[in-house]
Structure formats: structure tokens, C-alpha cells
Length: 307
Image 1 (tube, rainbow, N blue to C red):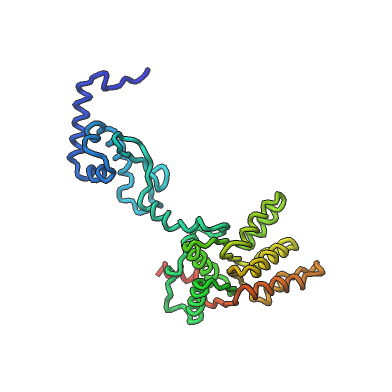
Image 2: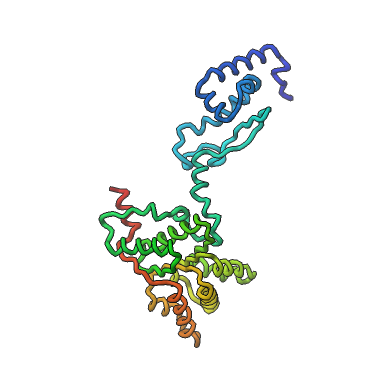
């Protein structure tokens, strides 16, 4: 059976209830603070108190929220709201935490390619904390990295696992993205896998073009990918074009130059040594080698958290 409108069944009782709800809202300082902050006048509250009350009930889910991880709304960072422009209308709004997150990640729109994980998406040089356990070598490397970023100078960051090479590159990429530069941050093992998949449909051409013409390219973890003739040819073509056009390029690797050249030398290809040398020639032209020495910073961070 269709539910009857209470205002039609007993209009006097319904009107009395409406006035009571309106009076409760209008005399509730906390409720009125929220209502007035949204530009809703008292007369609108008096006319539609139930609608206002329902909205405030949902709004209350945001009370004492500590961040997006604690969000209790149906859509994280979003909540229903009311807008008044002569009449009340429904709308959606973001909370302050969502606004801050959007502000922090606005630079990501400058990424043509991004293999950055969530932890690296907002990495910044300003967030790096130098401690007493950091060696002078690491501090000097950090300063050189920051200087190279500011001057758009190519770097080849190499060293042991966990010394922060990728993080430093992410800091540089994010800083330049915030300055309006177009960025391509490419994880080489992931790119090698994509190349095998996408070349069947020629979709790889778009990614290669973005790698070639981005203002700032990071080839992350180069040397960890599985090399084949096709991949080697693509890397050579990209690096050659960037060298010819003077585009800033950074690399991170666990290998020094000599070991990386051996990595690109394929034993079953008669031209292997020549092509590997060509790749290294362009890397040397594009980037200055900078060894990052130190303990595994991921382990140091975990130790610091426990302490």
C-alpha cells in the first residue's frame, strides 16, 4: 500500500512538528554554525527543517574524523550537502582532507607516464630527514641531487638496494612537475613487460613518444629488466633522441656503468657489444654518475618507527 503523506493525513500535527524541529535547529549553536557556513538562511531552515536535519545527520559522520583513512562516508572524502540560491538544492562536497589531498597531488597531472607508487606520489626533498646515522657521502649526494634537479642536469644514481635512489628521483620528478614540467617516470622492468604486450597492437608507440619528448624522464631501476633485442633498440632510440634534443634524463640502477654495459650485451646477437656500447655512450652523454652510499634507508625508517 502506498504510504500517505503525513502532511495530508494530519496537517495540523505535521505543521506543529515542523515548527518544533525548526525551533530546535535554530536554537542549536553547533547546528547553526554549520548551516550558516553553507550560506543557508534561517527562513530556509524554518521551511524545511526535516531536510536540514537529515543532512546534518550525514554531516555528523565527519565529526572527529582524523583523515581520509577514517572516513565513514559512502564515498571517501565526499559528503552530500545543500546549496541555497533562493531554494534548497542537493549537491556534493569534498571535505578538507580530500581538498588537501587533491592539492598535494595536483602535480600528478603533469605526468605523461607514472610508475610511481602511492608512497612516492607526494615525495619531496623537504620531507627528507637527515639524521646522525647518515654518512657525509649520503648528505653530499643529497645536495648534488637537489642541485641537479634545480638546474635540470642529468644524473645516473647507482648503488646498493634501499639507499634511496628511486625516492630521490621521485622527489626531483615531483618538484619539476609542480613547476609545470611534463614528466615520464618509467620503471624499466615494468616497461619491458608492457612493451612485450603493447607492441602487438602498436599501442607502445604512444608510450615511447612520451618517453622521448617529456621534459624530464626517469628510467628507474635500469638493469633490472629482462633484455631482448627489441627493448634494447627502443631504449637506444629514446636515449638518442633525448641526447640530440638536450632533454633532462635521470637513471637509477644497482649497476655501475661497466656492469650495466654487460647487462645490455646479448650473447646470442652478433651486434651485441656495439649496441650496448651505443646505449652506454648516450647514458654517459645524458647523465653524470652519482653513487649513493649508505645503509638500507627502508630498514632505518622501520627502526626509527619502532624507537
